[in-house]
Length: 399
Ligand code: HEM
Image (tube, rainbow, N blue to C red; front, side, top):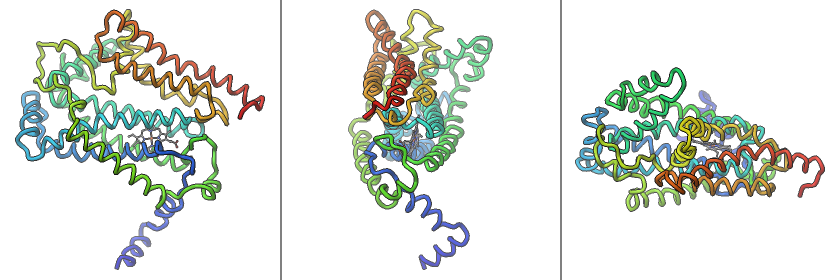
């Protein structure tokens, strides 16, 4: 019966050929570690977000007068297990960025953005922007104090754009201030266009990956034939390892959901939005703090801060063109200079995240400024490191 069905489907959809090409005869290099599971974990968290999102959506009311109660009363208290779905969704959003930062960090460390993987990197970057927009629009929906003032602060930044800024900000908000119209348009984007675009770009991202194949710890370019000879098949070997990693991850995830969810829910957001009362400190969720700190880092000039903020988010896109070292200078494992720069960058990113939550005064303001400069310093040092490594590669003085 099963065989007959497969034969019937095969004649119409070529499913066995598809299975062979996509799963059984797709080989990965042997020298990849658990960090190569970060991509699958990103897909897993996205699925968790969509499923939990659909359930909270059943009771959520996208109306400025009703939104706060629909979340904090109906979903959290009245609906059976509503609080579980809300915790899953909030923790999921936070963990999505943790997984994404690991995924991007892995890509940077092992030089996975280098030719021929530029399109893979660019589509990944677009996914990061889409994910950030989804998190930002979603954060307004509970209509709490921090939701409201974060949206008010960030949308105000658009007003600084020359000529079109003041009109643009009104267009985004649908009003002069963040209001009911802002809530409904953020809601529409959060539940329709942005997730749909994430799905589309994930498909393009994976297609690009299948064309060029996975990188490896040593950054050694491998042909399909070499991988077939020395690699591991995606099905059943690699996928069984992925299931193990996913199980461990889910254990950790649900531990956070049930016992340690507070990091994903700001206490100030349990107060309803109030147009007339600004909270003493306005700060975004932890995953945006580093970029927010760059905005504040140039404390002596609002314009420089804004330019720095936009650049800090955009500059990773250009990695494939800033870092042009040839083979064997692909993976940081074989690049001592780059390795130092990478770890300084990681430490700096953590420092920016910590500083982003502290008041931007006195010593903290100066530390924020220095950390912002170091952030850009990493990207600007790459062409210099590339030049040195190109010389080393040309003189054959490597490894
Ligand atoms: C929704 C977001 C994303 C999803 C679902 C996703 C999914 C995946 C998957 C499944 C893989 C293959 C497994 C692996 O190598 O980990 C992969 C590889 C890759 N992704 Fe992503 N990704 C996302 C975001 C990003 C971002 C933000 C970047 C960087 C800006 C990025 C860059 C890459 C690169 C360079 C590879 C190839 C890695 C290698 O072969 O060494 N991805 N992605």
